[in-house]
Length: 194
Ligand code: UP5
Ligand code: MG
Image (cartoon, rainbow, N blue to C red):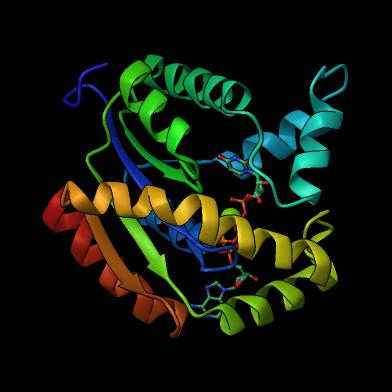
């Protein structure tokens, strides 16, 4: 794809920063396809007959990054299906979170337009995730997995944010405030940069 055919915005930020919440609001009010890498992986994990279900569950529970081949294939398929139906604007949520993924995706699928980076203090994210964990049923919304996710985010995913930052592609959004206040900032950025 060219960057004219397919417009990709990467939505990055720590676990519980509010990526999914903000993407859902954008989809409701704008013409975007929301693809959460985590949601695609969880769906594949739950798919009957999946050969990689057990492997995905292990990586997610340990807060580790699933091998890129799996995630990129899921994203590639979803992008192609949506493109074939005439949808061209994509929010790629929670991806890329490791350098190899960033490079492969942009080489093989399409370069991103820019990156929305949700910046949130760890204690705030922890509180949100523990609260959500009471009802989410997610294998990784427990104190032990959350600690591992934070660690992976700092060690493995922040270098990706820095990589795009050096290309002047990162727009930082402070998200330690009410959902609608964060959203107002997000909308301004989208209108200016897409
Ligand atoms: N909430 C949201 N915004 C709020 C606000 N402004 N004020 C108050 N509360 C707010 O929000 C989390 C919770 O906070 C919700 O209850 C929400 O109501 C509240 P959400 O919007 O869900 O935050 P999000 O950033 O999407 O958090 P999520 O838990 O989804 O982030 P993760 O990045 O940890 O999860 P993801 O699903 O992306 O990945 C899960 C795992 O999949 C990874 O750990 C990894 O193991 C694996 N993975 C890969 O291996 N490769 C990938 O490429 C992607 C994922
Ligand atoms: Mg999410």
